[in-house]
Length: 354
Length: 229
Image (cartoon, rainbow over all chains, first blue to last red; front, side):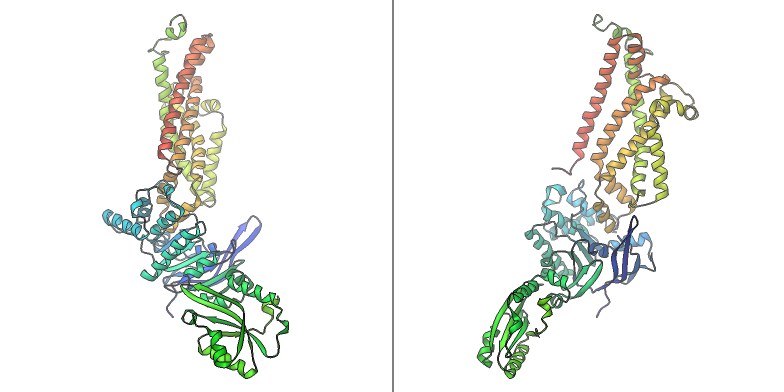
């Protein structure tokens, strides 16, 4: 595995509010690989924004080590690079915000030019670059507009152009789609995804909307009370959430649990077993259940079914009860595994009884 | 005309007590303190905002120093300030009386007021904009110039207008140290001599002066504002 482009180790952020001490981030370690779109989800107040602000030291950690692209920004309780160096490193870490934070008294083109203030390019090259960026975000014809004349989605696209002005390797998105309507949200997310694929931009996506993460992320971390309670590849966390909060966020699985609760599963017969089947895009169209019956003469009844799209991949989840003798049931499981279906036997009632 | 406003006509246009002289004196006493007090006030206003807790150059010591200086000069009634700083005025401009001597207390009197106004105007700039500028690697000077001052320019124009109008008010009191001006005309040649016509005309002229400042200030502020549709 390549070296992480962002490496946060044992990060703690503590605020003093009068006599009260608030531990906004507690012992968080997070390694983000180049090219990741890393979703960080959690309710507001979970410490997501505080955590990602330690990446570019907008928030200095109380404790911990921050390493970005091989440079140690912070360790041993202090900043390891000069302010001037930090300023130039920050230009390689783009950031976009929930409320866009554009300069309202300057036009769109000047907003993006502001980010190039300390670049080596001459004036003509700067302007050319800004126009290219505005073209990329689809706003070339609005270069002379003032931010207030643009819609929320357009303003966010200007701020993306601004964040990309210095060719950053990393883009931090702090609830960037939370103030936008669904259509604009998807446009912005798709733009981030396109940038990720086209130029290998590493994206850190903070959000409380699971749909945003499902749409674009490949990895996910779930935060609660300043701690990361669960993290990993999107599909793993999504399909097999371990923590209650994660289940709430992933929603789909929560619906499954609710559905299963509604059945009274305490009296499965001796020849019945409950399985969770998870299958990906390649075999999502196959009628597995019909095949089971045809080939093995095994009856399977569907208790719950759902198909989700996780970073462009359709992923299906089925909860089925398989009926048959032990040999038939084992054969059925083998067949399913051969068809690249992840099979999990659910005999732990805890999942819906708690 | 001489029947309605006999004493007004009698004062004449030129000369030591003439209307023209008073108008020039009022403009003179408004202009220079506006420049000097304006610069000082802007410096202190910016210093207060950048050094305050959570500011880009947070510094408790310098914040307290600036804050106390501004508070002290804001707290002293202007008429007392005139007398209180007379020795300093003598040191600076070589005299304690007259129009030029009035520039020193007027500058000091207006600076504290303006510094607070600037502070409030700059604090109206959303902290998110500052953070966004820091995130793209802007220097502190960039943030002061291109974010604080530029984003607040319309608000700064508005508070400057208010300050200028209050400065016109202060010039009326400068008559107490023989500085002349329309305020002095209204009191010394109008009120004290029971020449109500002089008081009336001097008051109307001050009102006109204030009105012009207000209209021009509002116009510029509106012109500079791109934040509201």
